[in-house]
Image (cartoon, rainbow, N blue to C red; front, side, top):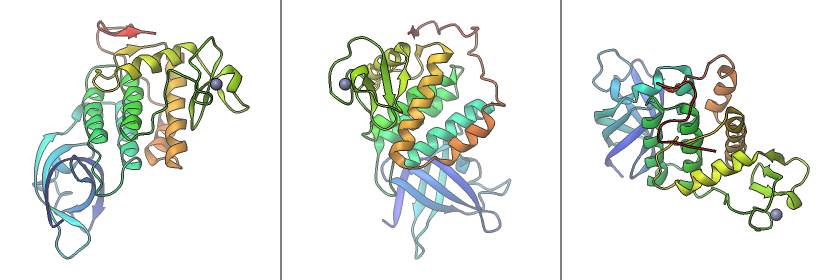
Length: 268
Ligand SMILES: [Zn+2]
């Protein structure tokens, strides 16, 4: 692969030499690519905007004698400026980007994960409540990577759900009362219902449409996190950052509501 033209999401941008940047790109058709962008850290560099973290851009890259590719052309598609307007959205967007990184390999195309990440960043940048968008997007990423559990049956014995209580096992997903063991955490009925509803929309549904109480989201947030960390084997950097800043960041309210469900949304 000596020359590549593709649409990419910038997952990471790091200082490199004086004004250059070292990029980790997630491309639509070629998977993750590490590349150098010359002059991309100077205020007037022609690659500066299109190489910002979380930006989407059409890029041409070239591989010379070095292992790294070099960005030769870049045209900005979206800066995803909306995710930068508060710490809450920025932190969630970074967690989704880190998850996409952890769930994919270098130069191995994962178009489902790519499409989900691009759609999630656009939704997170909108006025929609970011928490439902984030939790929904994370399950979609896991589904696109082939890791999602089934939400319509016990993941231990395979029996369809009967009556609560239900439990959550970090690496396996939901289990029923008879199968639960020490260490499985209780799964609120509302959380299981949310997962089942969202699962039905996983392929084409608009992210963040199903609304739930904050207590349900607290459970869902923890469970998707446990599941991801179990499967990737470590705590990604953006998750550690989130742990440090989330207690200080206040959750933004969706526009035109006081936490009430969105007009077209469903509630569990
Ligand atoms: Zn069971």
